[in-house]
Image (cartoon, rainbow, N blue to C red; front, top):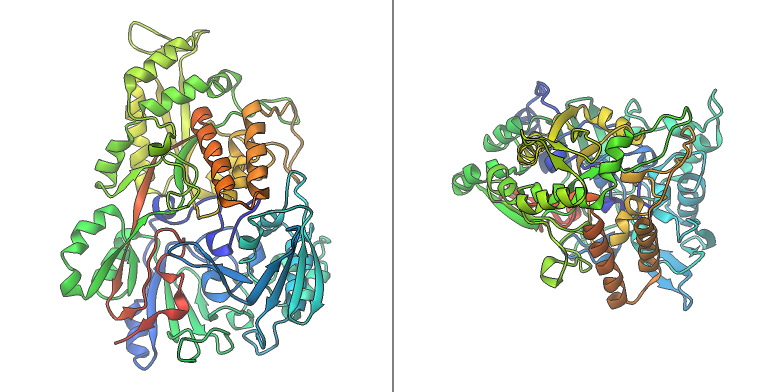
Length: 597
């Protein structure tokens, strides 16, 4: 997914499955109550939580969704501290960067083991990268996270000994170290599936460890193994007896023996489950906060405020001028002309009452969002430093439209210079309640400007297909974020796999013609590449400040609001360090958590 996506726990997934976009479905509840598990497991140290979506795979390399099982089951060479985003050791005990900053020597901890007791060595590291992530026959989004520089070259690996591996880069690349949080995979369990072809000539690995696989056959190196899985209902995780980490007293971790992960895609039902004591943790929507705040003492739980949520929520225009292999434009040329007009995009931004979205939809629990970089990041360049913002100003919006050749009929309908009515559609996930409410308000905001905005809510998978096919006009989505700006390079680089607003040719897709890259997109390319090459923090901050200013000036996307991360957790759960910065929320330090009845 990411050109240089960082740690797998912070990967910038294409689409967020939590928060605004995450509550996608309203299906029937599972017939199995968590109370049943608690009553049957009174002697088990247990945590009962929930997730919004069912599992798609147990194979990390084939995963493309969040949340997923890998938070519980896998570890990488490094990790990120969840409250500040600092790099910390994981499977690697140390690393060293060469003087020319092109070689990273990584040394594993001694005596590492897989969940089946087999040793975890540098052979597994070599296999993970060379045979899986860097294998062109395996269509994994993880590979994008290691591509370096303008030519997007992959590093080379040298095995030094059982515990040491050198990563040799084609050029200095500052974000590379964070990408090493991507999970290490077991060579002894997966090598045969990579080397063996199926009847279509593809590696059997592509279908290995799907959700039909008996969970106990899945070998892990993280804090937990998968004990059982009931599709659409629950996953039960059991403590990995061979996990490397120990607490300050030398005791093995994780402290919690079993985790029951209920699949509850209905947010109202999830709240009922939490309030009745059936769940130990639950993320909160703005409408949940006021109600649960009154129940904290009686319910024996605490509401944690993690600050601004990491990531971005935005709408984007399809500015692609290309045509498909049959000569048909992806975007109506009339509308493409509007979308490629900077003044038009800025007018739309001024027309949106984002403060009202916060007050009415988010109950005041949020703030305006003006940057593609997470507000918690040290690279964030805020309005107080001079970043251009688009506060609600419909008069300014009309002024911009008229100055660009648009005109109004006597009835107040907006026409372009050729007399075409300004009307377009907003693609959005049908299951997002907040997304629907925000889209409706945007529709209302544009109506006084004479613009007709049609809402096109679709199933999430359909939305993804349309975006990938370039068959859309405007979309509404949320992306995850993190500390490292280069996480989003796959979106901002003109040849990035998620450069949706002007998606170029993609491997495995039919050819396209007449694809054009604007001068400002080329400038973004240069900034992203130079930012990744620079190791001096102050210089990097200056580069990414210029990047943020450029995005806000050209406005290929309009950023909307930044919700506050809130979660409610039973008081019996200790060791909590909840943060909105980390997409794992209260689980980023999972091995440290305890359940004390």
